[in-house]
Image 1: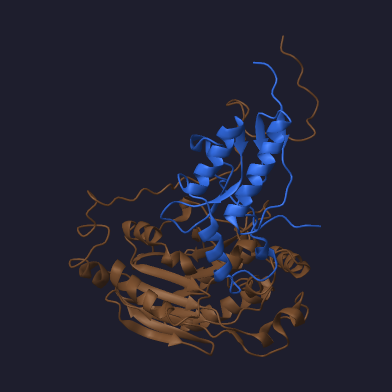
Image 2: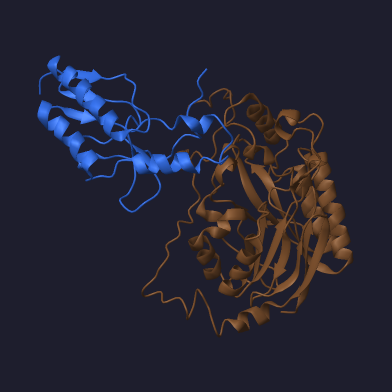
Length: 136
Length: 330
């Protein structure tokens, strides 16, 4: 089977800006591909970013507007954002794994997903942690 | 099946003091039993009190950890002196006693939001663990499994219940209707105006009596040494929960309550035979269910994270450290 060069990307996203963040994915994937990577992996919920506000205030203390922004910025399998990610993988001939906030086409619940460039490889986290991990 | 009187107790717990709250439960059950009640119901998480702070703390701040440690320390374990005392009160008073508790397994550190039913024979006869803690509650309670989605026959009707916003889970309600529930307990912290209409809807939908029972709590009821008390509550004396207790009939009528802004006990006469007879018109798990079109599947298998298996002939694991090996045969 031979060896494979892989890339782990540690980078910042453009919080709650799906299209700009996918632009970052495109730039960073191109850079990794130039270095010879055939598999490029991005962090958890990289698109459109971690919902940082959840640890900054009591639960349900009026964050519906933030949640609405998250739901609106989430990725739906088969939507233009997903197609754009797939085209990045195709353009550079790499396997691309990107964590996204994903929702069903008609759903309102985002889930954390690391989809590959092939939607058949989608796997959802089965149990989100109680909020995010503490930063200490 | 004779009609009986039931009681819904709206009271403040002795917050984070399990034994004092158990004593309060026993005293209030004595009063309700003296008034003729055969079933006495207490609110959600009443022992050792609903952890209201989950709606005020940030998820990972220092107060949250200290408060959780207190709640864990004061939680109820099935088969412990706390449940023995409640079971003994049920036996002595000849009543069914149902109470919400923060519960944990004897060897566990995860709490569950549970509803315990003690029978007049002095046993802890049934338990329901809330399937889905709501919002901030997920910071202190785990999720129950489907094995406790059941009812128990009291002799004057089948008794069960769902906790707080479980009552907004239509499939959970459907499961209890399929169990044939006649006396549906709905312990809660929900103080909203919409809660009583919810109880009335469930009564008419399930053709069941609904005993909605809510804690009431003032800031003055908070213990002085509550971690983060001043930060979280600002020293005010306002109601944290005004209560919302009500008893509903199987036609959706309000039989008692709602009671708000005070502690008290509501009573109502219930007749399970009448509830069942009313299902001639509407039986959500029977002739009105259209089970050929709409069908619910419930996973009622107890959920365990780890299963330990032993060789069939070994039975339970032996003592540790093991004693000297038996001499080889022969």
